[in-house]
Amino acid sequence: MKKNIKEGIAGYLFLLPWLVGFFGLTLIPMIASLFFSFTQYDMLTPAIPVGIKNYVSLFADGRFINSLKVTFKYVIVSVPLQLAFALLIALLLKKNRRGVKVYRAMYYLPSLFGGSVAVSILWRQLFNKEGVFNQILAVFGIEGKNWIATPSSALNTLIVLAVWQFGASMVIFLASLKQIPEDYYEAATLDGAGKIAQFFKITLPLLTPMVFFNIVMQVINAFQSFNSAYIISNGSGGPLDSTLFYSLYLYIKAFNHFQMGYASAMAWILLIIIAAVTGLMFLFAKFWVFYDD
Image (cartoon, rainbow, N blue to C red; front, top):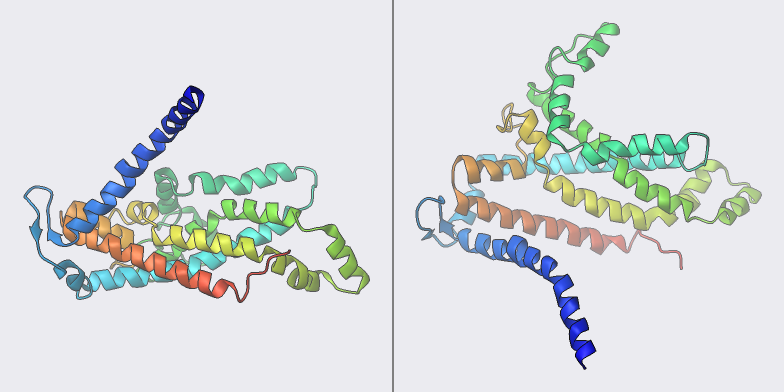
């Protein structure tokens, strides 16, 4: 009996850090933000209940609507491109050739620090008027521009930055590719199937579970993108709100305008959007995700 009690206490002690983190950093802040979303609160004076006013005001706010459009465009373009590059590189690095481990590490590195402040600053320098990208274009006689300061191209630079961070998805694809039995390919070759046919008939169907997993994870991450837009636009979401991501506008409302109630309402709308999009992805997954039983 005493031994069981000691084991139980030990188990709870191991759980304690997680429980403290969950309640202190997740559950309690979420409950507080839900409460504040129905109030007018500036962190300096007591919260004033306003009902659903914050939620109604959101959809009359032009910048809020624009932030949704910018974020959805970013998600729709960056996620497929990132996963396409990840799968392509994984296919190229599948074989155990000389030096392949070095290449795998090199391609994975951007995903470790790609979202850092330092990389965002470097990215801003690469795509400004005197940046390296324009210098490369000049070699071919093409006149460059300040890509970050131009509304039509600013978001594209952030999309390129996101695509560059394909390393994590690549590793997942690479691990999955190694799990596909070579017998399948040998049988397909005997039947006269070429490499392209083998990819679409064998490789891609067997990879669909990992494709689905990567899509879900990258979509969730993309909806919450903040660092790169904040650094590259100097916290404004410019030029002309072309890089005003949803999370950046939430930050502006919370910590620049001190409208914590409004920002809390935005946070809950974002949660609903992510949950709805994720739910739809799971709903349609049964039509294209295949599991090898």
